Image (cartoon, rainbow, N blue to C red):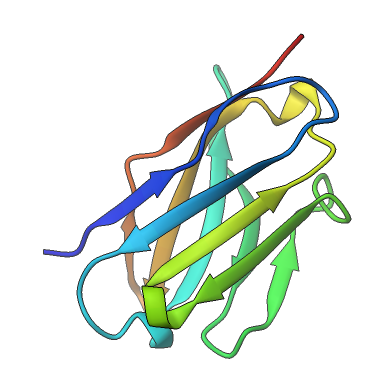
Length: 115
């Protein structure tokens, strides 16, 4: 069974940085598109960033210039480097693996940006 395990969340002050990781079990990691999403309390889950199997990236406007998504296929891991964090970045962050119509989600990791 496929597992996606996020880690790296925590409490950080505004302007600080965190790096999230999402480790995938199973084979064939390199052929999947890997995305990051987030869900704040009382809000719908929203797209944050994606890195395709070919390495192309795309970001939500709200995080462009501050967040960077990357992947290490040898480690079956995707990363989200988050810099200059703002209180509005507070949310549970999820990674998502997609191949065609199939997708799998991780359990999420909490990021809290506060003084």
